[in-house]
Image 1 (cartoon, rainbow, N blue to C red):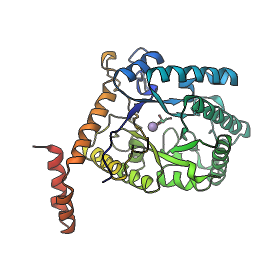
Image 2 (cartoon, rainbow, N blue to C red; image 1 turned 90 degrees about the vertical axis):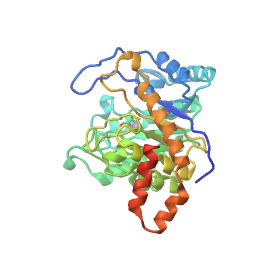
Image 3 (tube, protein in one colour; image 1 turned 30 degrees about the horizontal axis):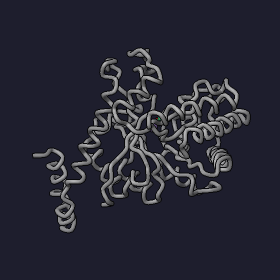
Length: 346
Ligand code: XUL
Ligand code: MN
């Protein structure tokens, strides 16, 4: 295991959500961005994740000058509070131009919109003092196979990544794969796909990935193995820990809420490679239950962090030597029970 270090935690304003789902309205009144930022500070999180329009609301209606002015003003507020911006992500799934895809739309005008919006996102990130851009490719894929050409989609995607890499020589792009939802099939469903796409760009060193536990589970994969795979390439630049109960809609449950053992294995993989020791944050992409009352609004985030910290103790106190002896003896039955007993505690 790598040398022990302390982890730093973060979340995004969208993680204090109001409870709406496709079948019903919000169950909690909306709170302001300022309130969310003050909660983040009060509870000892060290960074915030941003979508471009979390940082500069309604940015499509604003001039470049105004966007930069507002981004700089936000940076001053973050600096005063001692809060870092972890990343900025272009929200490419709301605008009318992205109805049929963003970078991979069949319409060249819409593809141009997606690229221009992304370049603005890079400028915002620069103002906020982060070189990390997260790309969740929400609408890049298909509902109707015959309406799209996946090979051409890949070319369009690489073209968009190349434009971003050329726009800012320092920026790093972290692709966040997800196999489905909102698309039936996404073009970049796994970390293997994301890293393969990175290899086609003009500067593969600056294209990496972000793993979200729930997205890996939705792809039928083990999030711990995805972490090992990405970190073996030195490409895990951010992380969305959460949980997911099987192959359903994206649930964004509190970390460890479905499988403590999987959460333990994910932290083991992070520890193995020293995640966090190069400045990476542990982010929780979790949502409150729809039933949550406003007075308990932060609990899903606090509980996720508490579970992480408690499981980290379990990872660090796991008897690796005893485990290695069982592995050498191919006694996986005993190894299995050893993990269970360790998680159960005395
Ligand atoms: C969507 C998702 C997003 C990204 C940020 O499933 O996880 O919140 O993490 O754009
Ligand atoms: Mn996410």
